[in-house]
Image 1 (tube, rainbow, N blue to C red):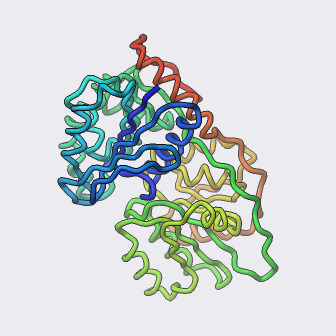
Image 2 (image 1 turned 90 degrees about the horizontal axis):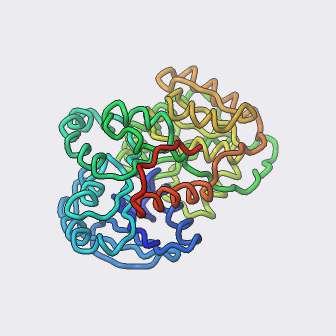
Length: 365
């Protein structure tokens, strides 16, 4: 099949949606599909990345949270019929709206829906955006959610989606075995994700003040909160114990995972919780917020996974949980859905949509 994947951003940009789209496109290409990514960027470019043709269209509105490319919309309006299926990603970005308007190509929508904005200002705008979001939800032949918790949110706010909503959990990647450190070496805690306010990395940094000097926090990711978080760490006297790695390639990231004693996610809301799933799949004891998406990942991972829920607003509780996780030692990697599973389930959705069969209503697990 010829698949056009529409995303607000694409690799090498970092984030949960970007990782999802990159892994999905790689799997679709390996399965023999002809995949093109249609995305937006500061400048126009066309390149092939790992066998995937990536079309980047210049931004008309460059604002970080509300990026919009009119050339992207014009391209889709003119060329959407060349694809068997368009697959748009992220309710929280305007690129998906471009995929829904001005063409009649079969549309699959993965909203990565949080039910709110990522800041007070964006949360206030969220109800105003809902009519536009409803346009995408209505236009889509299938709405793919990554957890049942996300599906419940979608149906709460857009009940008309009904049986068009399916659940395909995110996949995980195999990771190298842990490196055995010498006694007395730093106990490294891994925190992965886009550096946004709602990820609450600041709470993890504050909790580090309650841990001994042998503990180190490795922060992997970029985002608008990066400078503020660096200043916070420096102001708390943690500059040498909180290391900001920024964007890492796969080899460097694997090295970080291999050296870590534990992982943490303090995020206030997620559609899935990819960093938690990847940590558990690597056998890393993990501390996470008790949000519905994280609880669902825990259910997928099973009782053998070491996962402790903690409220990041309570520094003492979070610090104690991190200390217990770092002392627990690696466990057997959790058996979670793989990206191959995701690709198989997604291709089944594509086939149903492209052939205009009855609405897809089964929940894939």
